[in-house]
Image (cartoon, rainbow, N blue to C red; front, side):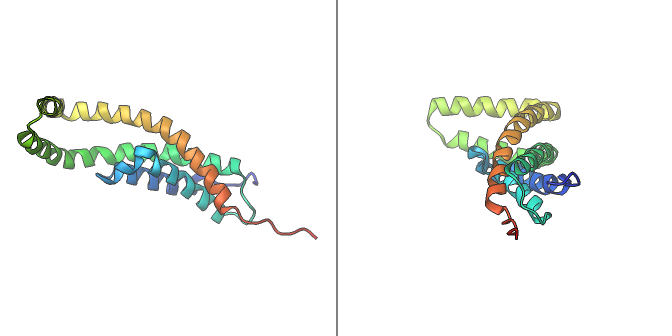
Amino acid sequence: MSTTTSYKQPALIGGLVLGVLSALPIVYFGNCCCLWIITGGVVAAYVLQSNQSTPITPADGALAGLLAGLTGAIIHFLLSIPIDIVVGPWERAFGQRLLEMTNNPQMQEALTRSLDQSARGGFAFLIIRRAGVLLLMLVLGGAFSTVGGVLGALMFKKSSAPTA
Protein backbone atom coordinates (compact mmCIF):
# COMPACT_ATOMS: atom_id res chain seq x y z
CA MET A 1 0.00 0.00 0.00
CA SER A 2 1.34 3.41 -0.80
CA THR A 3 2.04 5.95 1.91
CA THR A 4 -0.80 8.14 0.60
CA THR A 5 -3.44 5.60 1.60
CA SER A 6 -6.19 7.29 3.55
CA TYR A 7 -7.97 5.25 6.19
CA LYS A 8 -10.33 8.10 7.14
CA GLN A 9 -13.22 7.21 4.84
CA PRO A 10 -13.08 3.42 5.52
CA ALA A 11 -12.86 4.07 9.27
CA LEU A 12 -15.80 6.48 9.20
CA ILE A 13 -18.08 4.33 7.03
CA GLY A 14 -17.22 1.09 8.85
CA GLY A 15 -17.56 2.92 12.18
CA LEU A 16 -20.97 4.27 11.20
CA VAL A 17 -22.20 0.77 10.32
CA LEU A 18 -20.85 -0.61 13.60
CA GLY A 19 -21.96 2.29 15.80
CA VAL A 20 -25.46 2.80 14.42
CA LEU A 21 -26.40 -0.89 14.34
CA SER A 22 -24.96 -1.40 17.84
CA ALA A 23 -26.96 1.52 19.27
CA LEU A 24 -30.39 0.75 17.78
CA PRO A 25 -32.90 -0.89 20.12
CA ILE A 26 -33.50 -4.58 19.39
CA VAL A 27 -31.06 -4.48 16.43
CA TYR A 28 -28.17 -4.27 18.92
CA PHE A 29 -28.83 -7.91 19.88
CA GLY A 30 -26.80 -8.79 16.77
CA ASN A 31 -23.75 -7.88 18.83
CA CYS A 32 -24.30 -10.78 21.22
CA CYS A 33 -21.97 -12.59 18.80
CA CYS A 34 -20.12 -9.39 17.77
CA LEU A 35 -21.91 -9.42 14.40
CA TRP A 36 -22.10 -5.64 13.95
CA ILE A 37 -18.56 -5.13 15.21
CA ILE A 38 -17.12 -7.64 12.73
CA THR A 39 -19.35 -6.23 9.98
CA GLY A 40 -17.95 -2.74 10.61
CA GLY A 41 -14.43 -4.09 10.02
CA VAL A 42 -15.49 -5.94 6.87
CA VAL A 43 -17.16 -2.78 5.51
CA ALA A 44 -14.03 -0.73 6.28
CA ALA A 45 -11.86 -3.19 4.34
CA TYR A 46 -14.34 -3.15 1.45
CA VAL A 47 -14.28 0.66 1.28
CA LEU A 48 -10.48 0.68 1.52
CA GLN A 49 -10.18 -1.81 -1.35
CA SER A 50 -12.74 0.12 -3.40
CA ASN A 51 -10.54 3.22 -3.10
CA GLN A 52 -7.40 1.39 -4.30
CA SER A 53 -6.39 0.13 -7.71
CA THR A 54 -3.94 -2.34 -6.19
CA PRO A 55 -4.85 -5.23 -3.90
CA ILE A 56 -4.89 -4.49 -0.18
CA THR A 57 -3.10 -6.76 2.26
CA PRO A 58 -4.62 -8.37 5.35
CA ALA A 59 -2.57 -5.88 7.40
CA ASP A 60 -4.26 -2.99 5.54
CA GLY A 61 -7.65 -4.56 6.27
CA ALA A 62 -6.70 -5.05 9.92
CA LEU A 63 -5.76 -1.39 10.31
CA ALA A 64 -8.93 -0.22 8.55
CA GLY A 65 -10.96 -2.56 10.78
CA LEU A 66 -9.24 -1.38 13.95
CA LEU A 67 -9.89 2.27 13.10
CA ALA A 68 -13.51 1.44 12.23
CA GLY A 69 -13.91 -0.31 15.58
CA LEU A 70 -12.57 2.65 17.53
CA THR A 71 -14.65 5.10 15.50
CA GLY A 72 -17.73 2.90 15.87
CA ALA A 73 -17.33 2.75 19.65
CA ILE A 74 -17.44 6.55 19.83
CA ILE A 75 -20.41 6.75 17.43
CA HIS A 76 -22.21 4.11 19.51
CA PHE A 77 -21.57 6.14 22.67
CA LEU A 78 -22.88 9.36 21.13
CA LEU A 79 -26.01 7.74 19.67
CA SER A 80 -26.88 5.50 22.60
CA ILE A 81 -27.36 8.37 25.07
CA PRO A 82 -30.28 10.06 23.26
CA ILE A 83 -31.70 6.65 22.31
CA ASP A 84 -31.61 5.59 25.99
CA ILE A 85 -33.34 8.83 26.99
CA VAL A 86 -36.14 8.26 24.48
CA VAL A 87 -36.52 4.48 24.90
CA GLY A 88 -35.82 4.32 28.66
CA PRO A 89 -39.36 5.16 29.82
CA TRP A 90 -40.80 2.59 27.42
CA GLU A 91 -38.39 -0.08 28.74
CA ARG A 92 -39.36 0.74 32.34
CA ALA A 93 -43.08 0.53 31.49
CA PHE A 94 -42.51 -2.79 29.76
CA GLY A 95 -40.56 -4.07 32.77
CA GLN A 96 -43.37 -2.96 35.10
CA ARG A 97 -45.95 -4.84 33.00
CA LEU A 98 -43.72 -7.90 32.98
CA LEU A 99 -43.37 -7.65 36.77
CA GLU A 100 -47.14 -7.56 37.16
CA MET A 101 -47.61 -10.63 34.95
CA THR A 102 -44.94 -12.92 36.41
CA ASN A 103 -45.60 -15.37 39.23
CA ASN A 104 -41.96 -16.35 39.73
CA PRO A 105 -40.59 -14.73 42.94
CA GLN A 106 -36.99 -14.80 41.70
CA MET A 107 -37.97 -13.11 38.45
CA GLN A 108 -40.02 -10.54 40.38
CA GLU A 109 -37.05 -9.75 42.62
CA ALA A 110 -34.69 -9.35 39.66
CA LEU A 111 -37.14 -7.13 37.77
CA THR A 112 -37.85 -5.02 40.85
CA ARG A 113 -34.13 -4.50 41.45
CA SER A 114 -33.58 -3.56 37.81
CA LEU A 115 -36.52 -1.15 37.74
CA ASP A 116 -35.45 0.49 41.02
CA GLN A 117 -31.90 0.95 39.74
CA SER A 118 -32.98 2.52 36.44
CA ALA A 119 -35.54 4.79 38.15
CA ARG A 120 -33.14 6.27 40.69
CA GLY A 121 -30.10 6.54 38.43
CA GLY A 122 -31.04 9.58 36.41
CA PHE A 123 -28.95 11.25 33.73
CA ALA A 124 -25.66 11.00 35.64
CA PHE A 125 -26.11 7.26 36.03
CA LEU A 126 -26.89 6.99 32.32
CA ILE A 127 -23.65 8.78 31.39
CA ILE A 128 -21.57 6.66 33.79
CA ARG A 129 -23.15 3.45 32.49
CA ARG A 130 -22.62 4.53 28.88
CA ALA A 131 -18.97 5.44 29.65
CA GLY A 132 -18.47 1.89 30.90
CA VAL A 133 -20.02 0.53 27.73
CA LEU A 134 -17.76 2.85 25.71
CA LEU A 135 -14.67 1.32 27.32
CA LEU A 136 -15.98 -2.17 26.61
CA MET A 137 -16.80 -1.21 23.02
CA LEU A 138 -13.32 0.27 22.52
CA VAL A 139 -11.75 -3.04 23.56
CA LEU A 140 -14.20 -5.39 21.84
CA GLY A 141 -14.69 -3.09 18.87
CA GLY A 142 -10.97 -2.73 18.38
CA ALA A 143 -10.37 -6.47 18.59
CA PHE A 144 -13.27 -7.91 16.62
CA SER A 145 -13.44 -5.21 13.95
CA THR A 146 -9.75 -5.87 13.30
CA VAL A 147 -10.67 -9.50 12.64
CA GLY A 148 -13.48 -8.25 10.38
CA GLY A 149 -10.99 -6.04 8.54
CA VAL A 150 -8.71 -9.01 7.87
CA LEU A 151 -11.68 -11.07 6.66
CA GLY A 152 -12.82 -8.19 4.47
CA ALA A 153 -9.34 -7.78 3.00
CA LEU A 154 -9.30 -11.47 2.08
CA MET A 155 -12.85 -11.43 0.69
CA PHE A 156 -12.62 -8.23 -1.36
CA LYS A 157 -8.95 -8.29 -2.41
CA LYS A 158 -8.56 -7.29 -6.05
CA SER A 159 -6.55 -9.68 -8.14
CA SER A 160 -3.19 -8.25 -9.05
CA ALA A 161 -2.50 -7.56 -12.71
CA PRO A 162 -0.39 -10.26 -14.35
CA THR A 163 3.20 -9.20 -14.98
CA ALA A 164 4.64 -9.65 -18.46
